[in-house]
Length: 238
Image 1: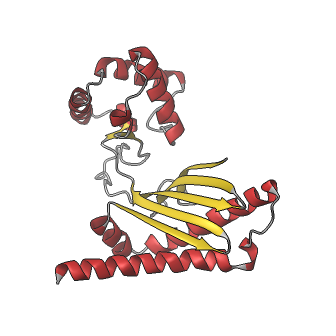
Image 2: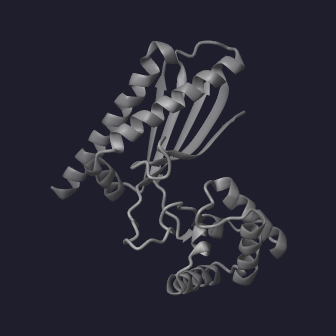
């Protein structure tokens, strides 16, 4: 019975998201029939923006966000509408290491953080001392502080590239997957920290007129990072 309820909730969620996507693709503004690449790029960005707004609206109700997080690690929804191959992938943005915690000023919290990353690096055959040197150098060079934190994946990737160079490694995928950023949780105040930041990692893939597009971004459901509710936006096409 319990499994049936979980399945029903999942199906209802998929149906709701599917309707949102169909609504956007069916609107007159988003009809993509042109073979002109520049026109398609503009229209795809508009479609992505609309999808972001619909997803933020959908997940803004706590019970929907909680239901999604508790029932699914990742959700992938493929569509084919109006000649467009479309895929939406959603998952909770959850990284074991918040790179911004290197800016912690509370000594006890900083000590616990450093102990935590040392364990993670040891478990993944990483070189923690080199990593700490790379992070400290990057923070100093770009003046990264509590007030001016790491705010996107590109910055994290740059740090990891420096780390790979200094360790003469070609890859460190296990570690890279564990390192991210949360611009809010590291901030210290007299009040209790809010550790329940609602972030959802989204990837949108399109294929239109044989042209492939990909966008990934993080939804800040409560819009605590900025008023758009979207951070770490990236858009690529082939």
